[in-house]
Length: 114
Image 1 (cartoon, rainbow, N blue to C red):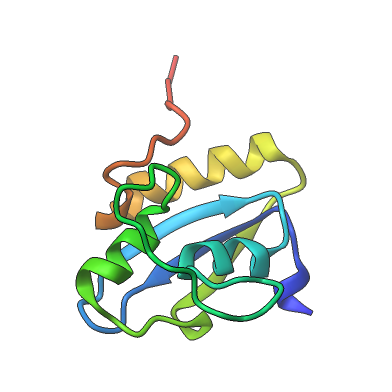
Image 2 (cartoon, rainbow, N blue to C red):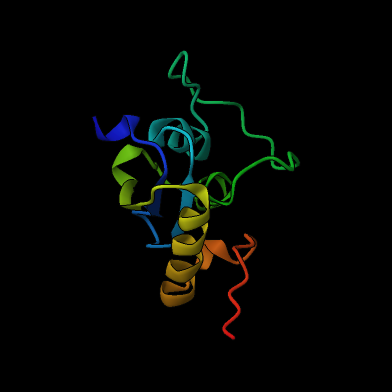
């Protein structure tokens, strides 16, 4: 199944304001999406949101600030790679091309051309 894939690139798009985030994960897609959405993988219950938690993702912070009703329908796999290096490279290129506004606080791999 798609949600069990790993080494994928994904995009979150807010259905309320159209803000976007592009990311990568080496783990299963569903595990990472549940972290972004603030949902327990074991119980399916929403986490109690703490804005002071430094481990919140940019997506989770946005969902709570925007007060949108995000779910897995807001997340899609947009690519994949054979290893983490290629995954990082593809993520960086996609962020550079699309400039998603929720990626402003996220560092991607620096791209140096000769």
